[in-house]
Length: 81
Image 1 (cartoon, rainbow, N blue to C red):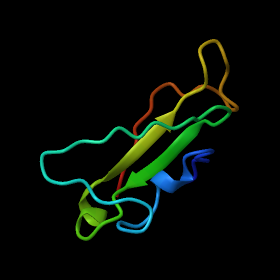
Image 2: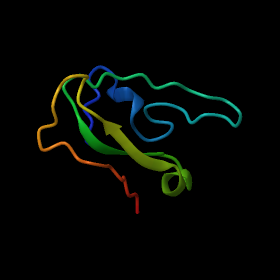
Image 3: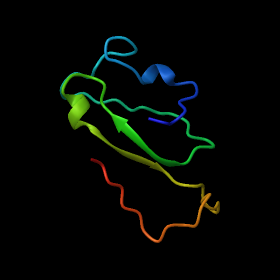
Image 4: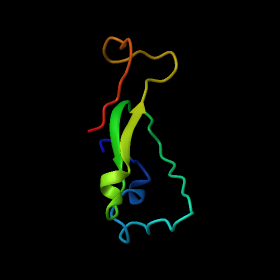
């Protein structure tokens, strides 16, 4: 949450409304543009009990040879609670 999904907003939403859930053993590649965005964001599933179990951090770092908008961290430790 927090990422602007320009031209792909229909790929993020509740199951059976914006898209159908994946069947067991199937896969899906979600391609989206993050131009001009950076930071640590959040992803999670939108269906049933997966909402509580499929989640994590999505880290978008500055482009190569670009600086952070703050002092560059020595190390990073994403913590998901």
